[in-house]
Image 1 (cartoon, rainbow, N blue to C red):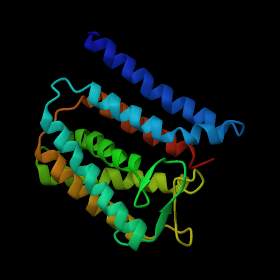
Image 2: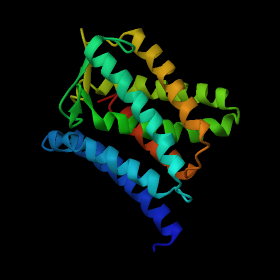
Image 3: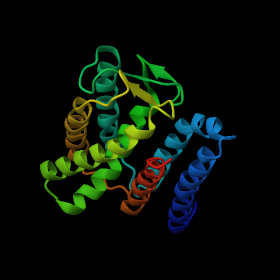
Image 4: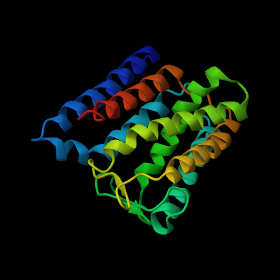
Length: 211
């Protein structure tokens, strides 16, 4: 077995390796398409890093993470197919395999973002309602950044190109519900890893606000 400190440090190294190499690769027009096509793998490996760094991995953690996963899937399916909750939009090809028009990796992303923002939110408030509101707000703020690059990266695009206010309201409500369910199980993930994941994702997409 690897030493816990080694696993932690190596995980941090991988998180930033994925992020920095992704930025440099996408900025290099010769490799842009290749790096964007590897987005599902990047997200999946980041999710695995989160799981590997949970010290006491119990079955309830899988149950907890499945809540934002399935909430994300249902709400995304309603959005893609019926224009409900988030508005009228469609997913592109760079997020991989889809079920009912929803890339499964986007559901993994819901679980990942819920877990890492929950760690941050619980530092501000230990009350599950308040921390769920904070976590939902953090995810919505992150979505504001993501939406700028999503069409260019062929992740997703809204009808008429403009992102409706409905999307952000939908994100806030859905993320709040995901947090309520997830935080009920009081999962103890590695907060250091959560910070690195959240900051790296924020920096990654913030770079492309000016690209």
